[in-house]
Image (cartoon, rainbow, N blue to C red; front, side, top):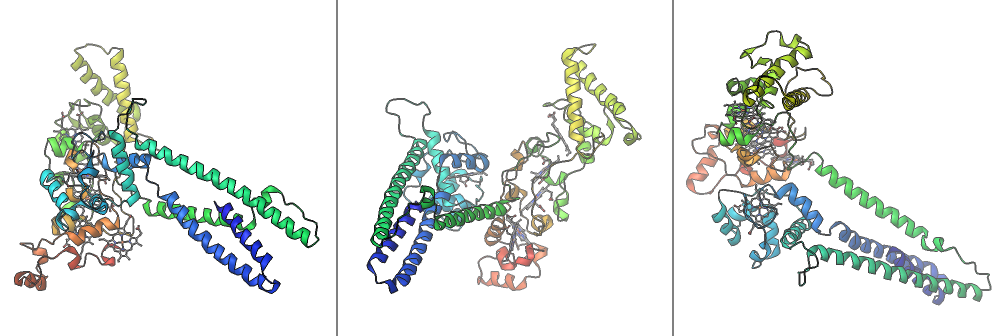
Length: 494
Ligand code: HEC
Ligand code: HEC
Ligand code: HEC
Ligand code: HEC
Ligand code: HEC
Ligand code: HEC
């Protein structure tokens, strides 16, 4: 494409040179070439935007898996936490496409603020389940929809009368690109020939000997080369910037933890209060991960789990030196060496196994199980730095704001009375902890714009007398976090 434009530009120059009086050549020449540059730029913009922004089934698939699959079934036909997405475009067909984008980006806004008819209908059917907001571009959303449609298409190929899949569609687009590429290539060759013969004509007319330039030299003129470099720099810059912005952001992040601790088992099935374990949330900046002692409040009694038996719970004991054989904490635990520690816990695992299997001595299977469990315990309590057991349980951090942001749990949980779930999602249904929210600046700001401050009976707000008065006289209908300064940069940034 670039080469073709270059050729056309050169053709222009030649023509002008041929027809103008010599003293105009210079002016005309620069004029044409500056026109030529602008044209390049426009073309580049057009071309690059189409390069960056092609919705595709594959992109949709990745996105869906990362951020939507948590709540929407992958087959697009069954209901999960959220509705089956199949046929969603038909359901939104009465409204502009932008409404559907707006829904995906911020469904709460569409329900509560815009009061969009389809959004309200959805809410009535699905409340209290809420869909979180997403920072996605139009193209990303289109990719998601392509994937939704694609999932509904039967995958057998060769079925007569099978509908054309959107995957085939994108294939067709690829073909179009290739055809375009070939046509442009041919055009470039033809133009090159014309220019060549024009040059030759001019040269012979002036009585000079015409020297034919080698092919590559004619194609990769200075202008084309500098333009290609410029293009590469722009693309590289674009990628660096988007990567930098997304760096550290990890919505959907769900690392494997050293112990298979399940919030579903504890906060869901057994209904243990969040703050029983995360008691920092109420009174400090950090919520704090509970120490092993907190676990022991229950697990000194519950020693064998129904799911993993001794495999997971023994890790707690081995980390703090509790001997489940005797029900006592071990004296001088940290001064024991690894073989002594191993002896204590493999005895516990062995005895439990023999008990359950009704055996006197370890069989082959039993020895394998004991060895495997011990390896699991050792690996989860040691790491690169600390190769020796005993070691603390090193939970992998899931949520992490950059250092320049100030965030306080106390402010939100105690003062603002915000539910943990508004920010962390349905933790009580999580087998593995996953970061539910994007934790982006837009996410904080959106909530501050929309959330009403809970004034009533809240001692922390006693000082906002002016607002109380305005609420009383009806001058203001509601006070949001924004009104009390929740959008001021220095409140969130150090
Ligand atoms: C935390 C769970 C959750 C996640 C994650 C989620 N959704 Fe939803 N979604 C819902 C719920 C619940 C509803 C039903 C409306 C409501 O109660 O808010 C819904 C409704 C929808 C609808 C409306 C469907 C219709 O029939 O009109 C669309 C479209 C949608 N979601 C798309 C998405 C996309 C795209 C993603 C990923 C970017 C996504 N959702 C991620 C929970 C979720
Ligand atoms: C029995 C104790 C216990 C209870 C009850 C509990 N948690 Fe946790 N929580 C943990 C442990 C242990 C971890 C670290 C392991 C993990 O991430 O799964 C954790 C991790 C978390 C994290 C992720 C921390 C990070 O690394 O970013 C969040 C968020 C969280 N809990 C929220 C909650 C909420 C909300 C509830 C109530 C619905 C709750 N927890 C109930 C023990 C508990
Ligand atoms: C207003 C949103 C919000 C609410 C409400 C909220 N959290 Fe958090 N939580 C966050 C953010 C943001 C982080 C990351 C903090 C950081 O990196 O400094 C976080 C981190 C955590 C962590 C990791 C350890 C830490 O403190 O950094 C745990 C555990 C946690 N939250 C539990 C809870 C529990 C339990 C509740 C309810 C009692 C709760 N959160 C309520 C937003 C919230
Ligand atoms: C308030 C009581 C309580 C506390 C505190 C508690 N748990 Fe539990 N835990 C339970 C109950 C009840 C079960 C379910 C037991 C079962 O399924 O047999 C359980 C199950 C487990 C299991 C699954 C065991 C299996 O094999 O099925 C693990 C792992 C676990 N807890 C780890 C922890 C950790 C780590 C902590 C500390 C951060 C902790 N628990 C704190 C009550 C508690
Ligand atoms: C679910 C809604 C919600 C989200 C998400 C949220 N906040 Fe808040 N935030 C509130 C509420 C409600 C208050 C009011 C509490 C108060 O009066 O101090 C508040 C207050 C604050 C304040 C004190 C403002 C003031 O004027 O005193 C700060 C600072 C703050 N939030 C930071 C953050 C940061 C940083 C994030 C994102 C990481 C965030 N918040 C995300 C709801 C939210
Ligand atoms: C309610 C809290 C909040 C307020 C108010 C706020 N920010 Fe932020 N800001 C954040 C959070 C959270 C991040 C981290 C986002 C991330 O990691 O992607 C951030 C990131 C940034 C960044 C880094 C770029 C980026 O996207 O990561 C800049 C620059 C910034 N904020 C500037 C500002 C300015 C200027 C203001 C005032 C107009 C402001 N912020 C107000 C919460 C806030």
